[in-house]
Length: 94
Image (cartoon, rainbow, N blue to C red; front, side, top):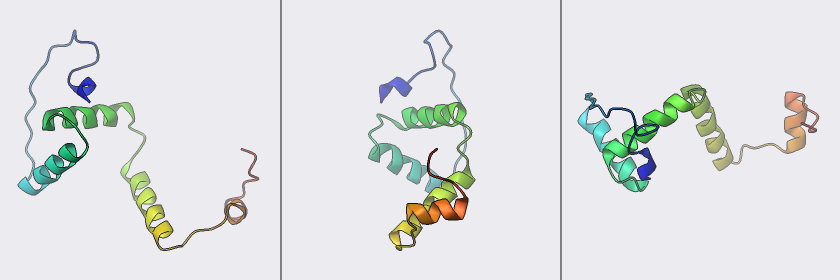
C-alpha cells in the first residue's frame, strides 16, 4: 500500500503534521493499520485522510445506515426485492 506514502505528484513539499489523540484511540488506529496490511501508522493515516478528502460524500449517517442494514441482515430482518419495490415505489427497471 505504499502508493499512499506521499502526495499527489512528488513535486509537493513533504511537511510534518502533529495532532493529539487519546491513547485508547491510538491503540485502535494501530490495530487497524496493522490488521489491514499498511506498512506504518503514517501510511494508514495519509491513506485515510486522502480517502476522506477525495470521497467526502460518504458521511457518518451513511455509515450508520450501512451498519444498521448489516445488523438487520444478521437478525434475519430482510425483505424481498418485490417488497422493497413496493415499499420504496420503484419499478425495478433502473
